[in-house]
Length: 293
Figure 1: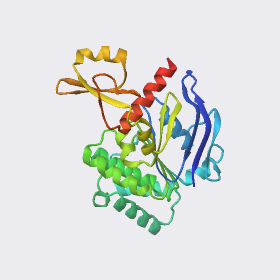
Figure 2: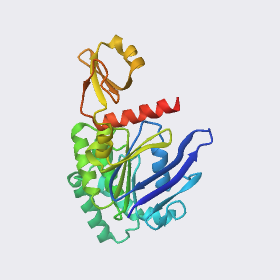
Figure 3: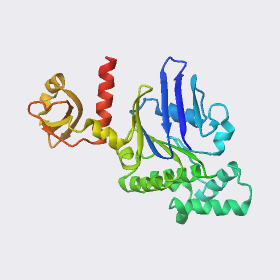
Figure 4: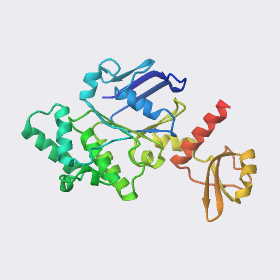
């Protein structure tokens, strides 16, 4: 099964073009949707999740028309939005049982088995009696995945899932997503490059509602290999460097600024550096900004 998005556009009443002719093909597995805040990622995720309408275009999930067959899509969809609220005084077990009822699992015995299995899968079984208000950010996100997995969905959408997580919780969450992504379509929408490089076999970069790049992260890396150069400079020299070179990232380390630039040939005073997915991401955004200017 694959998710196919064709020429999808959305303009809000205030005139903001959130999506501009977006076309993507998303196969089974982990797919990373990478872009800065305000790029249109959440609009696209909400549209796929049948929570808002598009102005034009189409979305199909296998044989389902996502924009017209919303009820059918919701039966095979798991969704973890960016802002996932919980009832703080209800236990994880009781809340997940309630979600299971809403998902159509009416048999009490079956529901108990499903809820228990999901809590074990997300490593929350030992704290199933605790109120959700006591959970850490990572625990809440894992509970969010548990509810998204109800009903054995064929498509799972997770929107900015690791923002604010500590390193340990982030690793646990990554391992959980990687396991889930073996058999279903998982769309990971994020502005954190490492999430995509760690997890996804396919990716797209989106900015200002447009798809700037789509493909295999390894292939995208090969496209910029040998074109990324590094130099350590004094902070006061940055403006001059930006005038003469295509600066894609700057990092302050021990009082010095490390600059990465994109160039087909080695600039004077720069050394070659192995490209990272971060370099792919920021060089793609830089080229888009140059083109728009």
